[in-house]
Image (cartoon, rainbow, N blue to C red; front, side, top):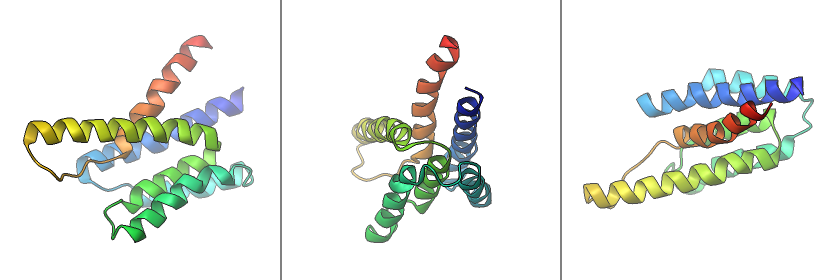
Length: 139
């Protein structure tokens, strides 16, 4: 139980710091993310390495898309994956991507622009927060 709370709070910390930075400066706090990535791997002894797969896919997407997908998003997903399991990462990532997509569609219609960029990490933060709040109230 205590380990679960630590994991939840570490993922929240990673997403909060990087979400704010991504929203304000369009970049993540790299040193912070890498330190927590290493700490997660050490703390969990690499048990959840499969949870880092989405982060690796985002990093591959960065290379394949000519950096249209941000490498920072991949690093944040790697850091979160070091602290939790694959199902949790997917439960953060899928709603976050859907929210970013829908927001982009709405803003595209309102602003009459075909192309725009949105920071992804704040959507991941919101997705995680919406899952975390009911769990805190039920405990």
